[in-house]
Image (cartoon, rainbow, N blue to C red; front, top):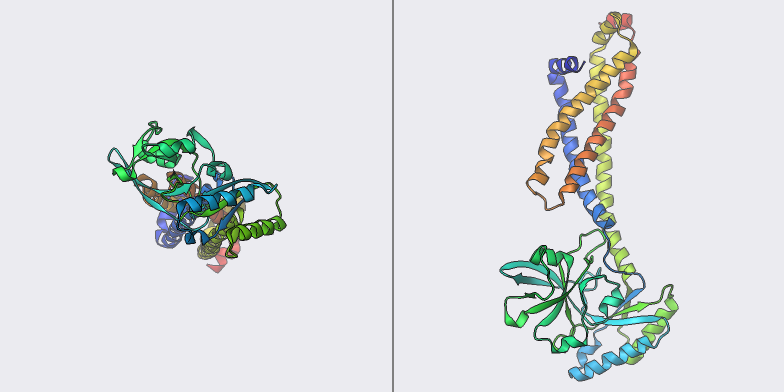
Length: 392
């Protein structure tokens, strides 16, 4: 049966070439779309690395007016005490402005034993780990003992540890090429997403907020109790305005910031989904039209087969099988090109994405071909021998 179908396809190679070409390009198009749709989907399933719920961010730049560092420290501690005195505030931290999902960024290169890589840099205080709900995997977080450290303490995430140290222990290692930027690794935290829930976690390094870098890192991060309402947010804003003597305050919720990033990605995904939908519709119409045309041209052949004893089901099965075999040949050719992406590490995406995209594209093409070939096949099964031969 298989050899017979191949012979039929070969004998009509010019007629089948158009359909195979359409199926081939459809497969490639679906492969590209599925690859880019799977990437954000797989990333979204990965853990965020911290607890964004019930975390507020306060942005204000009034502290730039305070020139004396000691006075700045006093002001910050007074603000912290005011906030902690409120019954719905659990903890308060200071950090740089590049809070996750804020859109702000700060990164630089790091070296270790001649190996160089980049990482996002976060300036945080001793309370940041608890406020953000991050997971400490190895070592410790910053504390007051780090004030007298010879090398500046630093905490890195798993992604940066793998980049610099591979499977080796990172604790106690010193990164940096110059004496001025040497930092000693004291802890390792779980990877945290900073750009978007649909992005993979990037290499990150956290260093301690101190008097040398305090002036331009004035973002306040507040951990509040669950189900804290907007009324309390107004209370916090009023208390901070009175303490900081300013009305230029902006309070954001990290969950809202994360949802905003989600909506931006959803727009892109929606556009891709619409493109994929139009592609599927065009492919289905093309396959259906080509199969219908081929069947009409083969009415005499179908009538002759019916005359020599072929049943309607046999005719229908043959036509569907021919379409599936054509689809298989097109898919094999498309897979040859698609498999080059993971084999040659093209596109800088996980190999798993490409393999899943190949499988999904294959299933969609087969499903479309079977659906589109079924109705013309049933129509062909209903052709009577005498009618077809009379028309011929």
